[in-house]
Image (cartoon, helix red, strand yellow):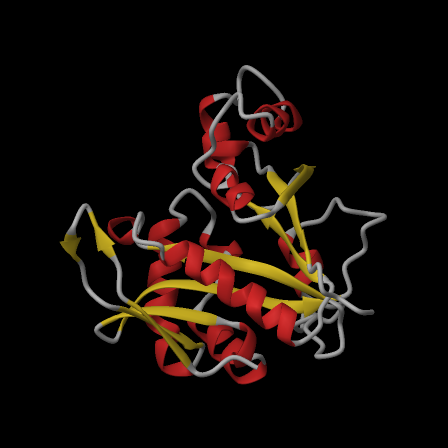
Length: 225
């Protein structure tokens, strides 16, 4: 299993930048992480985002699979998720469909085979420093160590907002996958080994992209189920 923290000292254009540390999720960061997500995903209805109480619950339930990037103790990025039994025969879903059970409680169960990524966000001023990539790697390291089937998520496609009147979400995703278009998030995720598998309709309340997301999957190559 992963240790409690990993250090990363990064240089950008030969100018030294601050040291970023990575820790597993704890309740002390919940309020700051709520503010982070609200800031980063400003086009998404806040009701579809994490709130402080939900982050505290996640920290108590599954800290070992959730990671926070810190700059001098201040949360500046996070990579979060839960373990689910994802149905690949019926991939159309909302975020709530996967993360909540019929009673509205978290769907996380320790013996579920798939890690479902619920959030990865980094403050804009820290992008380009390897923070997002390290958060992806930490989640992959957890999945490998825990012998889970892989990572699945509904990924945001912010670049689709510029093409929403020209093509469907599936057409946009196909063009990004082929390298004909670049999406700020999906292109990055593909560079981190994720496979796009089509649009998810009505995933989040985000009018800027017609409420669409993209199903992305990273199968664990070492999984022995």
